[in-house]
Length: 148
Figure: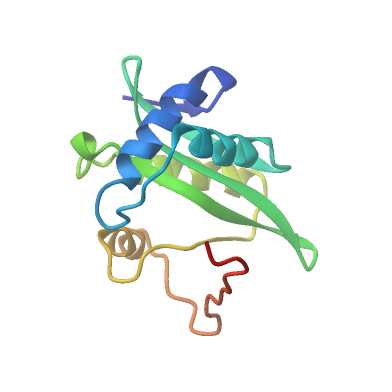
């Protein structure tokens, strides 16, 4: 297994895996390839983007994508998307991706990493094992602007 920075040539394979992963538990989301491509390309094009891929030979088996954001004189980092192929879960790939990203961010003098994930999910348990904690001072709020 190899971990490296994502390149433009990875985008199609990355989108295929993204759609496949997020159809399953705990998300059960329906994604079109065009939507996935638009979202992932946006993250990759963002200022301060840092995104890594895990591959087994030439097969993409996982990825972590995010972007830095200035906050009160420091840079914080948001993990926007993080996924591993169902066939390769529980083999340490997610942990290796996370550790690799954290090393890059430490070298770049980032202050903090934050993310959103599904409550009570295996993803939440994974992040807790990586020493991420629930921020008791913040809550996610949203409002739908157009009812389809």
